[in-house]
Length: 422
Image (cartoon, rainbow, N blue to C red; front, side, top):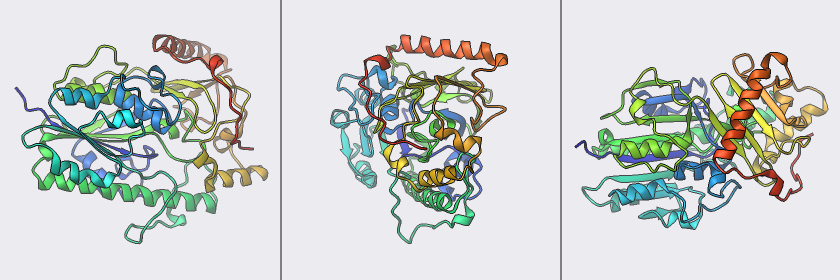
């Protein structure tokens, strides 16, 4: 019987897929995560189930969509009777731990053998783990979540050196905001490096499955809190030298699948009621295709909302239950320099289609052809040539909602939209 691997999950907090050297970013120093990717598998089409912290994390740790466990709203605690991947590993003999951000409430923390609130406490877990017993450790880093606070020991980026994504206006305020974000990403990378150095020094690297990702995408207007790719597309790297090859995988993956994939890697039975699926047997294949589609949702986050969507390799379909309303911004995004810059530029009518998307009153349905329009600037839901695609993806979302006992917007108390653009 093959030895069961140790397992480490590491999650950034608000880090987008493009913002690492291994994903082609030319300006952000991420040598440790780049090394991890070079020694393992890098996924180019990985998506969260929600562009919000706790709903995304609840689906990762439970293997169920957030609405299926009643955790679709921000800050909702995962129920004590919900499936819990670390607990399944614990019952199979693993020593389990969580340090740093978990954001699933007290009942979830009590389901670990070891739990501490700060990411820096991971060495204490390593000291306390029983000898000869496999371990599972979840590390929830706090970077690059706002607010940004730095020391002189971290490389500081200059506004002139940043690359402004197409959905943000190119202004000095935006560049300063991005430079601080870059600094937080590099600080995150240094902390990942400390964990990797420990595994090397302790002789554990070959026998440890390391997974690095983020709870959702970038913390900017038009990203966090939206179902557009900058809000839901995340980095995903897996390394296990003893059992995984190196390379790049382009198939669609949902972070909902991390739990089942980890369970199968550990030789633990996967409960049939999980929504996630294991990709473990297919990961060595260069032709790995992953899922046909991934589903995503947005609910209450400082203000109420109800958005559902599905993404394929080519298309993104979004249904807005509260159509006719502006986008509902998370409070930290609303207060950001980038949001203030968008407001300022909008008053001068200086925004292009991609940048103005966040200002528009939302239609009931959105459809984007990602091959022709990767920044999701042009809604093609009303174009005749896409009518069949619209109908197919709308039906897919409806079927998924029924199959997963989705919550209906009709029974939710509509809160006032406190944060608006425009």
